[in-house]
Image 1 (cartoon, rainbow, N blue to C red):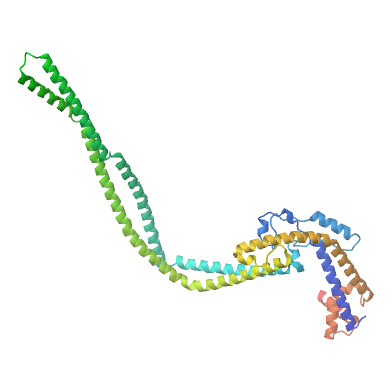
Image 2: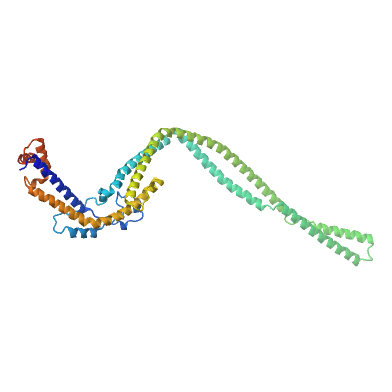
Length: 416
């Protein structure tokens, strides 16, 4: 039996015993992470959720427990949630503080997304905006069709221009051909004149020979200057090409005029659509801007916390380096550093794990010895020490004996 002060002392030792027992259970359930098997992609994410390629040092952990817990009365049961247990350690308290900030940032971004969705719904539901925007899309589609048609017609016009013989080349060819033919005619004329003079020196008088020579010369010139074969067809072909070129040019001019007129109307309707869209968006701009500003402040706080953590624990890190980067880039760089810290921390943890377990065993055993030597009501009531103390502090019981009677009665009434 114990009085109030003795019961308070007993309860303090009972709490210490429970704390050491819980700490020992945690040590026996916290399996270290094997960070060597993590991929490069895994190291870009935070440490609050387990990556897909996560692995644990099961064999090493089991070996440590086997060597320390021989004969000890300890229940070795892995924790329900193995991942992230180290965040409860003092070394990780700064990093762990960013989890709530990340959650708050996510809530702000969700709110921004909700505003954006509401804004889009307001725009999509507005008849005036839909009509103007639809007209703009129609005009743009028509202009695109005309642009494609214009490219095709321009290509055809260029091909027609290439098919027609250049005028300069034609004149040059015609002149050279005429010269050749006149030369041939002169040669034939001279040959025929010489033949006439030589073949009929006595039968014909001189004037007759001259007349015959002139007639033969004229015949040669006419033969030399006869109309070239295919000349008429070439003239007709050039005429058709010219007509087709004129038609294509007129069509291109019509397209240009049509596009210019349509573009003018398109710009007017586009301005109308933009004005209406701005009018619809205005009510959402201020709330959205406020949320974005709050997100920026939260992101700055997150980066500041990570910067302080790395500056304190990572000797290779330069303080303030993260502040120079955009948030996403800075956060990923910080996570890579934190994964490296976790890797070294896990190695150190495995080294000191056996000592921590031994210390927890000894501390728990020491508290248990004290409790057994000052036990006022039997070991089976130890877990009711808080209830007994509460009854005594309220004045319902003067000593532990009376408190046990009240507890027994309350338990009996509860079972009934």
